[in-house]
Length: 261
Image (cartoon, rainbow, N blue to C red; front, side):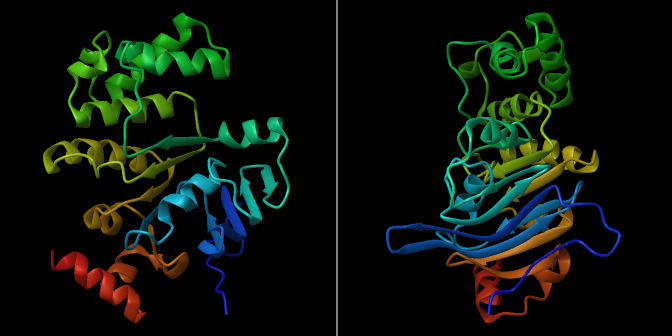
């Protein structure tokens, strides 16, 4: 029996992200199995679980980088039925509500930090270069990198480059930020720089879905945590409860392995 995990209660706001019976497969291999999920505005959801459990694929299905095979994906007022090929305009409307930060930084090495953040604003939102640069400079200040605006990414550390990538995603005014293991490629000290920015975003009320191996972030920053394994949701609920008192043996085994490292 598949369980419906839903944060909404009577009189709650409308979910900003909702997945209904979403499944994804590669050939005969089921990567996601009948995923049902609702995320309310302002919520921070941490997704944890063993490698290969479908966590990153789930994020990529939400923004349609990986088309799901079945189910319904809704972001804001845009709904896509996964069995159908979405119209380009509908797909664009869905993606404009989502900011994505990957493990790798994906910055243009031949452009300054400022240009990396401003370019997408000009092309996607139609902002003038002057307006885009002003927004970019404000965001760089917010992530603690105002002094890097006119440098090139190669002159920045990995943690700095990831913070630049976060600023670039925020510059497009997303309703929801998606993070796919944003600290996994960084050493612990540089990872803390990125986590500090993410904590500030969470405190500001940004809706965030974060695939992470950072248990401290999951327990102390996110309101809710979801544990996945083998393409299914094992557990879902308030973060501290899920992490400290898992109900399923598979979840307990995963958390023991994390804590024993």
